[in-house]
Image (cartoon, rainbow, N blue to C red; front, side):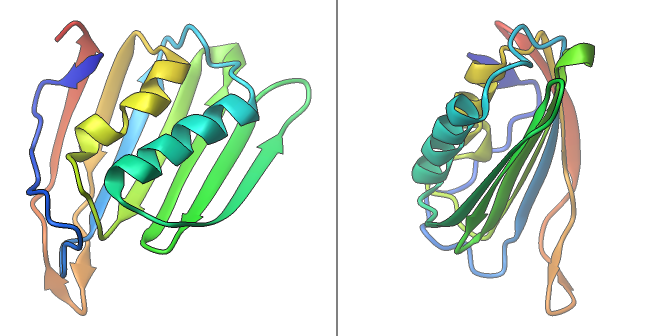
Length: 145
């Protein structure tokens, strides 16, 4: 399991109120960047379940000759994954106002499918009605950290 070097643990509150969590991940040197959309969808559904979010819609798009973009529309916002198998990379975007577990734990099903050698992540500051609600952070993770 990949562990971020700068993990931030959020309380297990079901609804985070003003806290808008927006994380982006760069999954590099992926052993399975060619994962199919069904496999990614299942992992993304599991991430959503771990967060306690409700899936409202799903959009898997397969590109030729390879690569996919999969989007889950959540009642609490969205999860999106785009892959570039030719470059062995994937980008993950997770934005939510609810987290029953830490984002770092919830993202594991998606990372397990992609099997990246390195993961870089960044939390983006978001506000709710003009109030700043989170402190930005970034870091990277390697297998076994």
